[in-house]
Image 1 (cartoon, helix red, strand yellow):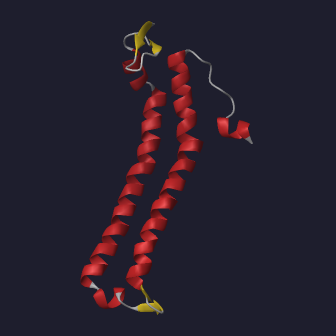
Image 2 (cartoon, rainbow, N blue to C red):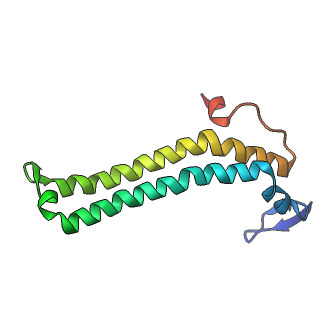
Image 3 (spheres, one colour):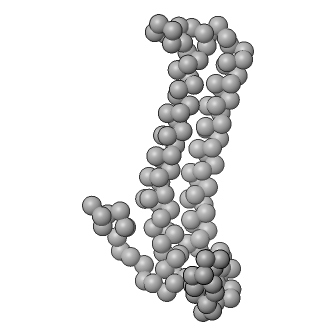
Length: 128
């Protein structure tokens, strides 16, 4: 391994040439990408559809969106607030997915690069 220095002056060991290409072609890395995409792409499509429904409904279904639910609170206001709720829900779901599915795979790949044997348990379970 060669040693390099970052812009702050810290030194770190560089993996041998061809390591990244070998890892990129490995089954673990392909599985990691597949599982990431299996979550990220559908979730992005669902959120965009939900957001576009809000925008379209606000523009073309004004009577419905203006329907009062409680006092001055109308459907449009509730839909707008639900956009924030949805954002936090997606962030939490991603965190959970990454913690349970992606991180163990990434740790295994990192272990291959650094020559560290794979851990049996997951770091989150060890903290409990």
